[in-house]
Length: 493
Length: 103
Image (cartoon, each protein chain N blue to C red):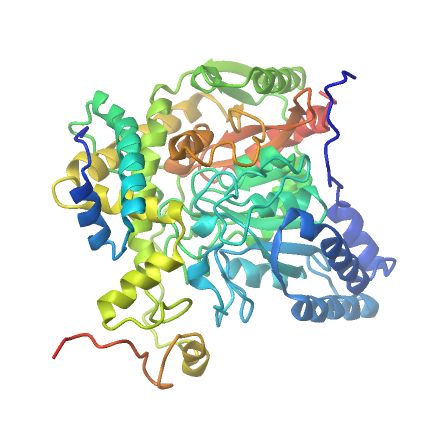
């Protein structure tokens, strides 16, 4: 150890696995009510420092835990998540619980309905602990855009947890929930999972219902799980996936047993490694960790092939045009009329709209609304929005072609490990570039899993992104399991 | 596509988006928008003539499709009282807002 080594404040604690907990609950050795209470104790202890939970849904959680314990005592059949404590990103609504989306403009709002993913989790027996902090309207890559203060990374509290689902990643890393839900529009599940050393899933677009998700960019928004290991994440996805009549874009495709899929060996799978994700700007320690992970896949019997995705460099500009254009339309609904914040004492309706939005929205949200409105405005629509949609087609086609020759594509999830709080807040463009490896899959609608894959010398987690074709989550889980088996621990690869 | 955004552009777009910016905010948004649009301009390098725009990925081959339509049947909507409770100002039946037209 050099004398420069600083003591790092860490809150990392690994939750027990779903299999272990569920067996305990089924046998009566673990009471769901005690488990929930122990999680609320843990939250009370570490939340003041990490700022993960914005509100707790204790009454509802304890009622659910009591139902599970009663069923277990009677020997009644238990759901796949019976008694499992789960946290919910605060862009998904829970009936009667505050829903802020990390924004002041929704302060005091208690939605009168549940998101479909929330309904499905509870039907499977999950105990929902509360609502979790995130970047305002899921816009950000560091969780520093929350109106309720940043989340700190449990691995090193001077660093960001990533974003926008930074709280959902931190909750699992610090054992403030066994699993969580987040949302991913341009990388908002994968990048924070990578920064906090947990597993995060980007399901295929349409795989999980968006009903009850406060919309950011509707053609890109996905709901997905975080967990401490790949198999648990696969189980969670199996619960929340499926068609929903309340979301017209949700897919009618049948839902496979993802956990069982993840158990299958990877021998013989063809793995593509795109050169464009290993170029300039990639942190050398991240590169080294990912190369180790790729070597472990080769050792497990995969065929590793170099591939090329030449349009990758156009993904960030394409993404920030498409996402902001959709956001500018989606966020028009926040006007001080039906819910949330209304600026007091405006003389006219038009002034009330403007003042409520000006006082209610943070700087990044305004920036994106302005950019999106600009890209859609008369005279610029063809040059910006239409052009971006055309390039989106090129990016998607490029992935479809690549998946003819390979079963999965592996890349670093982010070009760098977790950065320091405040490091990028002054430069929006630098912050956007933190999403450089994740926005491509977002635009193409394909699925992926990020899995811990070694660490830097300073002990910061590195994540490997495993991408698969539309509706091929099972393949992504299999590959991620193989990486986890050899490179999952902080320095074990 | 690489045209510089001006203060007037920012003010016009803010008006379209129902945002009221302080002079300080306008200045910093002007700077950020120009930086972002300069980055975005690299899309000009690509010849996209004849490329069909992609607005929705579900149509892509193998993406799962979304041809299901729900039957057109009457369904219960949210409870009015529960909805009205969340609004800043109502008369329990309608949302109330400041006056719309000057007289």
